[in-house]
Image 1: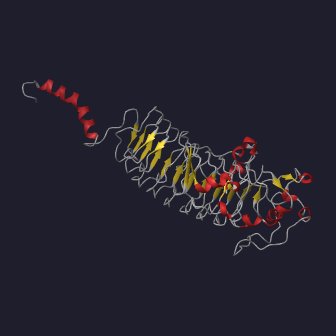
Image 2: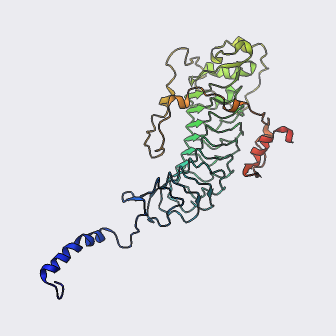
Image 3: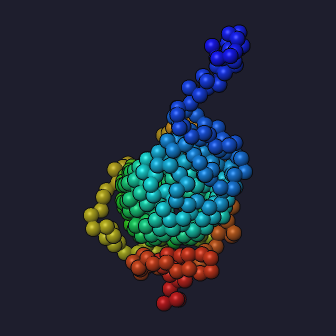
Length: 422
């Protein structure tokens, strides 16, 4: 008993102190407390601070936290030292982020998923923003205000599998932007303002499975643009301003299963002969390809035209532009979906193998048929200025030029200026 206190009183004091003592035993000595207004979990170590109107990242975070959820706040700036090195998942989407200081993520060598999407004030990225994230598998930069990307922004991200760049203001994509992303399987570029692709923009993407380029302003596809995409199964090019596309370009996609070309102003004249020929050979599920010109074929589906429609002014045969042409695996077949056999697959089923709660993309509902198949109205009239034709557009030194508050890679700037600038 305590000196000078009756045994009955001593026992009462001990019982009152027991819960506090047991609580202290449950918390490891020196363990950091959970930040105010946040919720913490032990397995895996997780700190959830979402939707609390935080204007900055909490100053003190458990150093061994593996998952940090800071979405739906008012955070405006990210600096080095804000995050612990044990993080594997970091969600910062739907904030007010406008500035990410160089080195902010450099020491997060265990990071596997980084979501910076839906930050409407994020207009530029430093070339070294993601340096050191060699284990990163999923990077979300959707729905920001990015108009250009530094040439080296994705360098050394060797583990990246999912890259979300949709619904930005991207105008063009320069050579070798994705050259280190051999493990990338999904590349989302839809809903931008891209009107020009350089010839080597997709170089290095040997593992790419899905490429979404719909709802842009593309008016041409370079002849060799897809030559590294041997594993691509899904390609969406609908709702652009394409008038022609070489069949040889599509022949570089031996694994292609689904191709969406609808809602483009296709010219169904001699220029379309190679594309028409590819349609006759392929087993790929293809959307409708409605002619916009010439007038006598307007409204017809290019796929079902007779070859005589292209004979009037066919150019003289010319060799395949590739030094080693690769025959299409279905070259001996005349089967065409829509003319018999299996009907085209429901586009809404393309993503059903990725559950809505999948850790790689936990915040998105599965795309619907309206999202990926239904025709869209031409954005802002869909009229594009003419680009700069020829190889000069993609072989220029890729420096960077700043105009007002925007920074453009030199290659993209010269594309935008067009040939008259020279």
